Every structure is written in structure tokens, then in C-alpha cells.
Image (tube, rainbow, N blue to C red):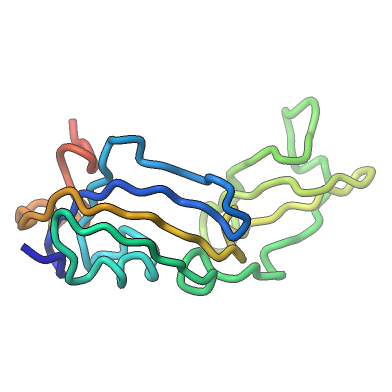
Length: 160
């Protein structure tokens, strides 16, 4: 069976950046996803199209087809008093912040006196990524999975 829209695929993967630094790995616990429902970054999902169980490949995904380029408008300076209840602000801390687009995850990238620079870009924005992938299994998605837009069961989303 080939990977195509409304199929659930299980994959093992290793993710590295352009400096060959390990960023993520499935560690033998295959990731299940519903193909054609934007559960993966565009560049990886496109490469998986048409693959079958047992296929192994390496794909380089440019930033534009991964987590996007760094968007300068998502980086801004805000007064430190916006972080009420936080005793010590440090570079690298992540917070959820309300924006015009709803809740956004932001990271503190600099602190200069009473001003804090926050970045709402995805942590992997601007990075070209390399995936080493093995397709473990491909199956038809259930009606519930298609309705919910994601895989259920082993390696997928668990409902209680």
C-alpha cells in the first residue's frame, strides 16, 4: 500500500540541521500521521507521497518548506513588566502570549535593562532540515481519523 491522502503512515526518523546536529529522533517509537492533512511539514509530507512500508530515504527540506523563514515582524521588544509573577527572566525562557492571531509561543532572545526581546518564530524557522526516514507501515485511515484530521492509536493521538 502506498502513502497517499487519507492513509495513516508510521515512520521512524532522525532529524538533523545543516550543521549535522541531531534535533529529534523517533527512537524506535514510530510516528503515525494522517497523510494529506498537514500533520507534517510540507517538504517532508511531499517526499513521503507514494512511498510504501520498508522504503528508506534521506530528504533535505529547505526552511521555506519546513518551518518557514525567520519573520522579522515576529521579533519584538516588550517591557519586562509584562512578565508578571516571573521573578527572574532569562534568555531561552518560553512563554505563551496573547496576540492578534491568538495564543503564540514566544522565546526570550535578549534582555536589555527593562526591555525584553521576544521571538514568536518557530524555533526551527530559517533552518534547512535533513530527515532520514524509514516507512514502517501504511494503512487506511478510519472514518474517525479522517474526521478528526489526525492518526489515532499507536504512534498517533490518543483519545481517553
